[in-house]
Length: 296
Image (cartoon, rainbow, N blue to C red; front, side, top):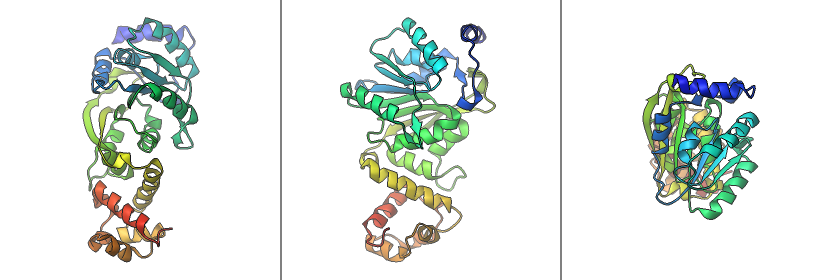
């Protein structure tokens, strides 16, 4: 890996490139791990493969062997470098690189949405396979869960603690609103712990490889419904030390007992804290709140 990084660094240095901490630029340099990450997805239905934060292309090189790749890179210096690198890729299908941020105001950006829509004209589904920058992993995954058409699967390499959040169980310290949303839409698997040594520059913390596989049901709900649900759950976890009755009142639902009774929900839930509840319970509660005429 040392020789590989030295070669890559020499070519980047020739362009005057220096990694930016503000963009979370820690590049994967282990080809065996890149191949393993790319191999976590079933490509038999020919999905569009979306890579966020392609960097200098270690993972991209593996993905283009699996199918059509739509890659996003915010750094114009790396985008230019990767366009040249792609000439040496063993491309089996199309490779499209978009120089843009994938987020805007906490939602998927117009360039991302537009490029995805164009790519999806030739595919029935899409998958996300990415080494996500630590700083944008949370906002991107949250936005991805609320996309009009969520990905069939996602494989993300990200900070260890964030991976724990995606797979966390009720009652654990890392269980929160993103855990609920991710686990309702996907089967979440924390595959492995990844040491800092496989990146350059080396991050100060370990990373995690997480696989998300789409469930039937929740993710098929309309996107606007899922967005309202996300705000609802975030609001409840914003008062996570309060029991559910108090959290609902903070959100403007004063008559929680009546809402629960009408929906056939156990009133004892109102005395429990959000961190104790299973993801499916939040869905049932939100359905009850949405159906209530008292809902704001």
